[in-house]
Length: 388
View 1 (cartoon, rainbow, N blue to C red):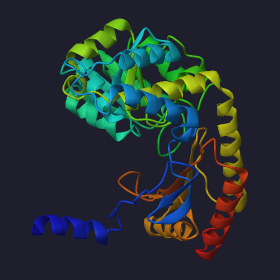
View 2 (view 1 turned 180 degrees about the horizontal axis):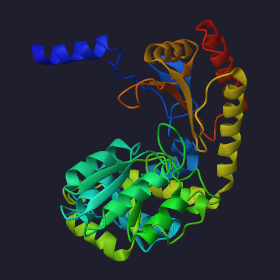
View 3 (view 1 turned 120 degrees about the vertical axis):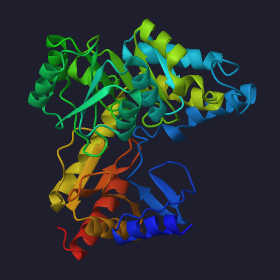
View 4 (view 1 turned 180 degrees about the vertical axis):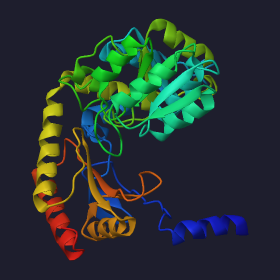
C-alpha cells in the first residue's frame, strides 16, 4: 500500500532505513555474512559458548531423547523436567529462592512489570533502560516516572514526590546495552531502603561478564539479597534463547499464575533449555573464562583508544565508539564490512540524535590475531574517512 511506501521513503530520506544481514554460519569469532567471511564484533555471545563442543553434544543428546518441540505452554503440556532443572540452577546461580524462565528477555520484562504493579503504583525508570522495560512499564497501567540516566539526585527527588502510591518500583538495567556502563546499584539500593521502594534489575548484559563467578552486576557490587527482582537472559553469555526472572518463591509463584507472557506462550523447546543449562554449568565449572573474556575486552578497547577513537566510558563487554553523525557512522560500518569486519552502526531512535556509534563487542574465543586484524581495519578505514 502507498501509505507504507511513504513511511519507508521517509526512513530512507532520513538515513534510518534498516535491512537484515544474512548469517550463514555459526555465531563464532569468524563467520559468514551474506557470503563473506567476517570477524564478528557484534555478537552478545560473550563467552563463545554457542559453539562449545561439549554443549553442542549435550543438545544433540537431548533432542534425540525429547524431540525438537515442547508441544504446549508450561501450564498445559510443555513443562519438562529440564525447565524445572534449569530454574533451580538459575536460582542457585543468582542467589535467590526461585526462578522462572520466559521465552525471551522481552517477554520476561513484559511479564514481570504487568504482574507486580498496576494503576495504584508507580514505576521509577532510568531514561536509558532497554525498550522491553519501557514497553512493560507502559503496559502495566502504573504511573511511569523517568529519571535522568544514572542520576541518583534525580531519583531521590522522584522518590520524595511519590509517597502516595501503594507500591514504588525502581527499575534499571544492570549494564546499559548501548553505552556499556553500569547502574549505580549501591546508591539505588540505599535510596530504595530509605524510601521503602522495591528494586528491579535487568542484568541481561552483566550475566556471565561481571563478578568473579560471572553472576552479574549484583555480585560485582556485593549486593546479594539486596535486590527484590532480578531479570536475566539466556540468549547472550548463556548462548541459547530466552529470559528469566529470579526472586522470592512467592514472587515466582505469582508470575506462574498471573504473567500473561508466560501463561500464553508455548514453552521453550528441550534443546534450547538444555543449551542454557549446559552453558550455565560450563560457566560454573570454568570461571576462568571470565578472565579470558576480559583480557580480550581490554586488548580491543586499548587498541581502539590508541587509534584515537572516542570511546564512551564502559566497564562491560560493550565498547561504544562514538561517531556522532549517523551518515559517518554508517560509512565507517560499511567500510569495515568491506574489509571483513562486522561492526554495525547504531543510529536513532536506538540512541539519541548526535550520538550515533559503532557498537563493538568481543567474545572470549576471539584470538589475538582476530583482534589485531580488526584494529588494522579500524585504522585504515578511520583514516580514510578522516575520523581519526
